Length: 212
Image (cartoon, rainbow, N blue to C red):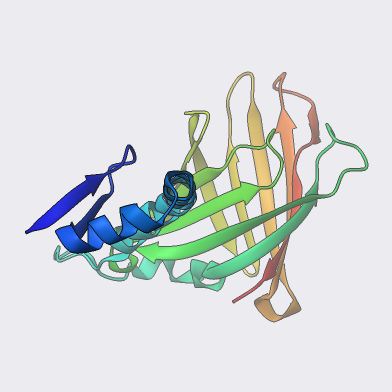
């Protein structure tokens, strides 16, 4: 019958009695402890990656719902679909070049468009936004949420090769424009904000370069 060796990380090693005796008689206990610690360290590093990958796979599974079909009203946004690297500036960090990445993908069969964004500087939160439409009045909207637990709603307009999105709030209004260039492989983003309802000032400027 196999004997079970259990370590503090929750790993089971099933060995036959003879194999277990062979190892324990010939391998120094310190070596065994070192091996176990090494395995535990690898698990701590790798396990979150596999969990995140599994989560992404689950999210990407096609929906069986009848409404999980392409939304024709959002077709003008198809140029956004793909992976992008970003480079930008912000007035709060003069002289600093901000690097990051974004991705745009259809979800629910194309009923909505999701945007994942991240800038590689801890002062800038990673965010997720979902684009939707109201076809009866020809309007578009974006719902935004980030790791600070901040949620916002933006109105969106599409015209030629420019996407604009904005929100009007008494103490913190924002407006952005994305202009497509280089045959759709570059997006030049300009941002402004207003804190007093009157004066607009520079916000985040971000240039997107298509990866795929």
